[in-house]
Amino acid sequence: MRYPLLSLLLAAGLLAGCAHPPRALAPQPLAQADAAIERFIAQRQLPGAALWVERVGQAPYHRAYGQRAVEPAAEPLDEATVFDAASLTKPVVTATLVQLLRERGQLDVDAPLQRYLPDCGGADKAGITLRHLLTHTSGLPSGLPRSGPAGDWSGADGAERTACALAPTAAPGTLFRYSDVNFVLLGRIIERQAGMPLQRFAEQALFQPLGMADSGYLPLQRMAAARIAPTERQADGQVLRGEVHDPTARRMGGVAGHAGLFTTTADLARFARMLLAGGVAEDGRRLLSPESVALLTTPQSPAGLAEKRGLGWDIASPYARPRGSLYPASSYGHTGFTGCVFWLDPTSRSFYVLLSNRVHPAAGTNVLPLYGELGTLAAQAAGVAPSASP
Image 1 (tube, rainbow, N blue to C red):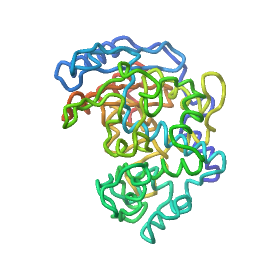
Image 2 (tube, rainbow, N blue to C red):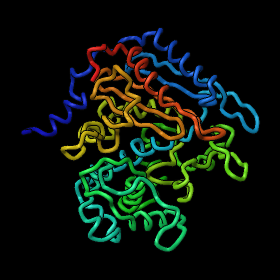
Image 3 (cartoon, helix red, strand yellow):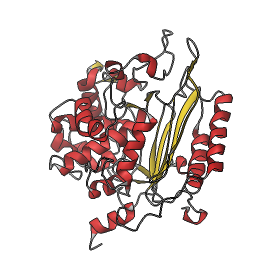
Image 4 (cartoon, rainbow, N blue to C red):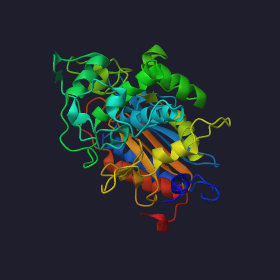
């Protein structure tokens, strides 16, 4: 390709004339989305949820459903509820901050991991680049064990040492394996290159500029626990509330590159509009360059792999069920273990967000069928035609 940036921008739908004119959301699919969420609540697959569906330029549709908490007492859920977004941390926070540092000349996504973490492993990791980490093609295992080289680990430093001691099980670029380890390492790299803790850099460089006032790590430092949706009951009988659900992130102190974000549907809607506007916030300030948006949201995986990821966002993988049956192959998104999904379509400039605490009061529920159903209904509401399907 002679003009690689032009091809990226075209694929991401970021050039003038690529998007269809906005139209009002269709009411019937939205009513069906309401019914689908209520059905899963009735089946006790989740206690409650918040939904946001929008086509940029038109009035959004947003609602809250069910209960914020069922233990120790029932609490109705409202749209101000703050949710543990789990792995939405990866694309929303970590991948975005990587691009901000890239634009500043502080990171090269094709540089070796060991340029930024010189003590991270030996020759077995010499071929791993940041691109491999961002596209889950590093060959590293999916998660951190409880014990590292020095026994049980704790804290961010312990997580890094344990991650760097892991042996890859495949050569970089030859296998797609979704891995929290990749983003644990990316979070540590961001802290070093930014010269400050991950939570502070995210607040200064991302949440404040976008007006995402309810988003961030360590929410109990910023708000009352009553606003936060609780998650799983622990072995001691205590219910997590405002403390991150992900066990690895919790052992790291609540701040990690792979999990730890707490947020609302309204805040994620602000983030979505920025991406769909090619990196420009609602107040007209540019947060990301069009090139960064394209790198985040168009295929960047090594050649030859069937699974396609941007440098942070899922495009075509076994985890892409939230696309539904209508959103095109150029759409992208991500899920979170706690019951969260975020899917965006640059062609129609539409998106949907579902935040829930399906792991409250206990894990073992299944909301994956709901994701696919909502993806199709959100696309219908936005007027995406059947001919646009992959």
